[in-house]
Length: 559
Image (cartoon, rainbow, N blue to C red; front, side, top):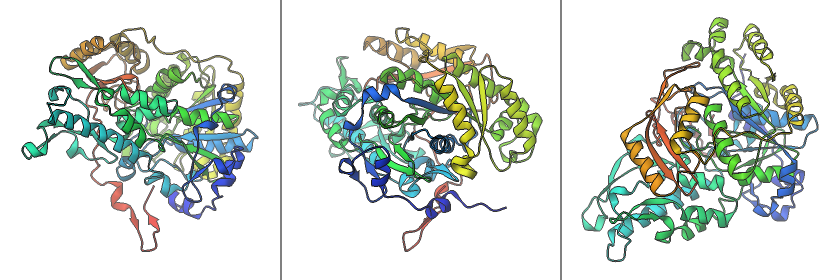
């Protein structure tokens, strides 16, 4: 049996004008800032804090994924379609795709099959220019830092050896991870070691997704820690008078983007930090906007629940006052077989024993989510290669877990019709939950204690080792008075541990903290574990090789 590609399905869809999508949310078309016929930006004035508190927020997360991903976005969109089909006014609120994965290994992030947001090509390629604005604001600060160092007579006396701020670009380019800038003599700037991060891993992206409004964005940008002067005084972006111009570049990017699902339901897409090296959630502004105009909002947090969900709760929710009513944990047969020891290249063949062997990974994520005090609904995202025997074994395993509901998710193949059972179980879980989540740690804890709590309770580590650079960073954090900030651990997404080879449910392992970066503007610190990098590289055969466009502007190969 042959199936249409995601792109073919998206290109065949008949889209409604964005004005009609806005009407479903009771938004007057005069309030829209149109980007063509199918995209629009929304003013922040639409946020209603009273309605936010009355609406139901549903978080979608996942088991530890295989490298291609397990379909959280597809599940989020399918669930949104299903909720609307059972009479719940629902908006899906998602992150914007980064070009790194689009042209790399993972592909786009607009869903899949018949559970997509559209226009798919636009969303995956540049969209409304938000990433470009983040990039420009970030790189403006980098230029201002170098300019200040270049002109010592008028500068702040910044010690270039202490500057950790990097430039960014929205592309996987390993050659730019570590560079030397300022070559070319006196006219080429001050010679120093530098580098690039990918845009989704930038502090500016993190700030965008945690800001409450433009004034708050500007203030947070001013709080960015740049480095030290030669006489050991801290330097912030506000000292460079940088944050005003940086915020001016973000005046449109701060506004969420309205698009639609294949079934014509509203979708808000805004911000795009990665969850393995940033907080991995869409913006607070976008989530609150969706809650202001819907009875239910479905949103996702990146990668597995050990990363995106933990950061969603301990950082985003803690700062914004939001609390999900229920959590949907996406599990796939192929991911659990992978964690049961089956090779990545052989996940399409039936193997019930490998599936059972990998169940420990699912169990750990369920336990973690329940420790936050949240009801869990397991969504089995069905792939066409899954067999009935495998599905039945996975369903039965979930049904035997106390307090856990399970439903088959067939949004990829059937859209909303394949997600109505999941939708009803989510509604039941949400309506039965009257409590707010319980955070994993207290912000008053020391940075070390916060890291150890997450490592042991969420990851299953036996101990945490702080390398010399991390210990030096801890002293700097303490000196700057930032030790009460939350933590945003950078860790591989392919394992509960910091070692990609430890699959399933590793326990008692040693977690190594290499260094701790300061993101004072975003309002957290970033312990970097293992071999994590903030600028990914392209795979041997990048997805870009299969993407093309013809003379009429028709794109092919996008996934």
